[in-house]
Image 1: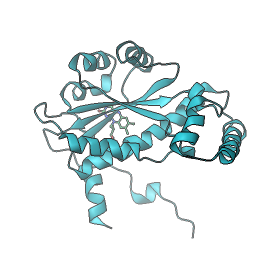
Image 2: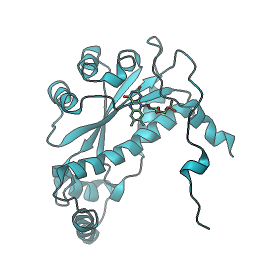
Image 3: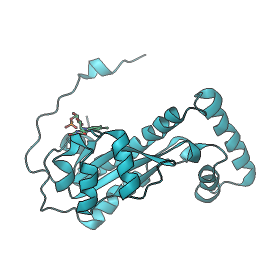
Image 4: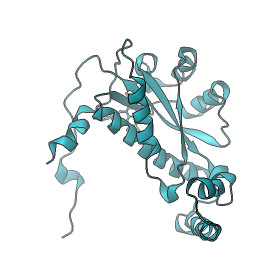
Length: 219
Ligand SMILES: Cc1cc2nc3c(=O)[nH]c(=O)nc-3n(C[C@H](O)[C@H](O)[C@H](O)COP(=O)(O)O)c2cc1C
């Protein structure tokens, strides 16, 4: 196997304790964000937003509702909240989807009409979720997690540690981001958070199912 590729994957672990005195240099953190921004997404609609919460008082508001990040949130160098888009922004005719096709993907009008149709069909018939707010939000979260993974790997490539944080009370955390981070929670919900920084102690050895347990080949 290719050691160069695997080295960052072996370096990365869910860091519980971050060194409060070490900050990620700005250009390296911007590289991590860029790796998130470049993540792939279904139809290319990028249904995510990354909030970087550095203010200690605001971190404290998130910390109150996060049992899985008690040690990480106060001490990490950078804390990212991943928002996923909700149903109103994901509907085929929404301003967000239409302007993404027009301004970001720069598609011509006839292709936009075609893609709107295809996308509507995908939400309605193929996945049967156009009227299901929860499924649409989860679909959006799945994509935000691709950006999360890109960012953790990019960090590890620069020997920066991370810990994905999903150990929170969802309803309370959404209320907190609405109140303290001015997030419109009709449009967005919290998918996950991630702490980035530097470990204070070596990680435990990796524990994973064997290749045979998780892979099946069909020749
Ligand atoms: C989506 C997601 C959410 C997670 N949430 C937490 C969390 O809230 N607190 C925590 O300490 N670890 C959290 N983890 C870390 C996992 O427990 C960890 O990745 C797993 O046990 C494997 O260990 P490793 O990452 O060190 O290889 C999370 C990981 C993922 C991918």
